[in-house]
Length: 324
Image (tube, rainbow, N blue to C red):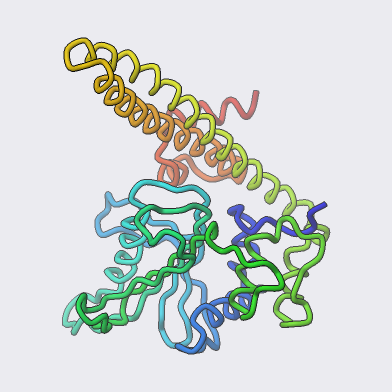
């Protein structure tokens, strides 16, 4: 039976890396991630709600947002499911942090570096296939020489990390192996390699959680599982609807353009439409589950609207259903 927290649940990820008591774990991980480039001695957690450029702008919420002792601003995000424009989304978040450094009045544009680290439990087709770690920097296209160190994005596609426990050679590889598999462990590996894994075991041990924390963790797991089940079901029904619609359209086109060509084109179009419809439904149901959790924590309707995109009427209906 698993003994440790699933770090890819929202609550679990922040419990391990996003608290003052466990801040040294995040420092250690980041130092291992950027080994040989710089050393972080300390960091401070920042306000994760970066206010927009206008009063109407929605807030941008990060999983973890911190500033190092050298002034580098770092975003650490965990993403379980693929989404369209994910690479652009990370660029947008990173850019917003840079823009928020602006100073009114006279200013020489001296900005602090902003790094974004994305844990990805999926494969993004825009990133190199088969490559676990992708580092994006501003560099000259011809010679690869960096022209600015002010923006950097590191994508870690976990499906491509396939090393076993005995094959891990560096502390960074050990970190990734542990995080990827931690919710299946009965014992924490690498305890003799580095003391940080002993502390990680202590913090993430399910048996040490208070009842309040265990309730929050189980809610987070339930939301994660429901979102996954909804996503899979939406894709399945989307494909089925797409095949049906595609067959009907294809047969109609086939009468005029040739049966074989028409069916193929219709199926392709219908499947694409069905998948998009399924993804939208899955995202909406995920936001409903997130709203339930926020309501149970006593959050306001306005805040839930900002975080989920649901209307006030939808949130009120959800609140009423919870009290029935």
